[in-house]
Amino acid sequence: MLTIGFIGAGNMAKAMMQGWAGNADIHQVVYSPNSGAQVAAELGLEAKQSALDVWAESDMVVLAMPPAQLEAVAKDLQLGIMMKPSVIVASVLGGVSLATLHAAFGEHVMVARTLPNVNVALKYGYTALAFDANMDQDVKGAIAALFLELGRTDELPEEQFGAVSALAGSGPAFVAAFAEAMTQAGIQAGIAPDTAARLAEQTVVGTARHMGDLKKDPMTLAHEVMTPGGSTAAGWEALEQGNLNGLVADAIQATMKKNAEFE
Ligand SMILES: NC(=O)C1=CN([C@@H]2O[C@H](COP(=O)(O)OP(=O)(O)OC[C@H]3O[C@@H](n4cnc5c(N)ncnc54)[C@H](OP(=O)(O)O)[C@@H]3O)[C@@H](O)[C@H]2O)C=CC1
Ligand SMILES: O=C(O)[C@@H]1CCC=N1
Image 1: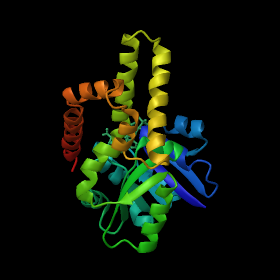
Image 2 (image 1 turned 60 degrees about the horizontal axis):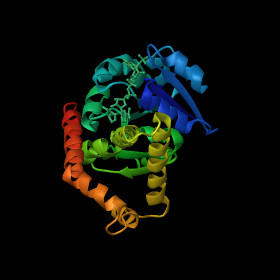
Image 3 (image 1 turned 30 degrees about the vertical axis):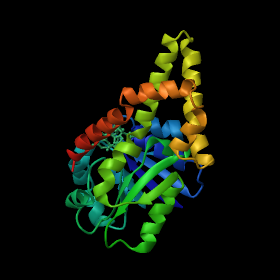
């Protein structure tokens, strides 16, 4: 039995807990100052009274609090690090590098930097992974296997984490924004709000599955939909004139800039 302990019980932590729930070989425990007990009760996990209690019981501790809480949490864990240095730290803290994690936890603690997205809740997530240069291959493999259970993973250089965070970490919010824009446009065109929302959602879900399951890149699929001289082409032209690509690039840049503030 492997015990995974969470420090923080917010949206990201809950998505990971849901993703690993049901794996009979994983026991999950959680500490969060306000919502820990409630989240544990909701998801059937064990609530702990402190971050130190989580450390004492865990094989791997997931740091899932706001990045600004890193120092405070590391201070709370000092005794645990001394008493049980074998615990692996898997940080999901956006923008926080391996070097910063080691500065907080010490050089001897085994640390992985992970960047999951909320879709791990349904095992359809994406997680970027970066490991200590000297981390044992077996430990790396074990961590990668845990995240692979939650969707796709890649080991990537840390320099790329800012861009990856914007695309894949923040990405579900941006794709949701497109669905919301379609819903609003549908309402403006006279469709009832809940029908418009359902059409937008089914179209986003179906399109994602179409590209993924049938292995089509976005432009191949787009051209299949765009009958030459037809209506989709007219809408596509409006997207180009409104510079959709430029707008998305601006959103990614703004996201990366904010992320870099934590480095
Ligand atoms: N949301 C996402 O899609 C992604 C988030 N991340 C990263 O995950 C982390 C959490 O983000 P997210 O879940 O969105 O944020 P939330 O605001 O939803 O959750 C933050 C959680 O941290 C807890 N917390 C705050 N201070 C402490 C502390 N000192 N000790 C222990 N727990 C604490 C909060 O406690 P309480 O509820 O008890 O008040 C809350 O449960 C961030 O570092 C973020 O960068 C990374 C990738 C994607
Ligand atoms: O918005 C954030 O800061 C976090 C990091 C990636 C997704 N959510």
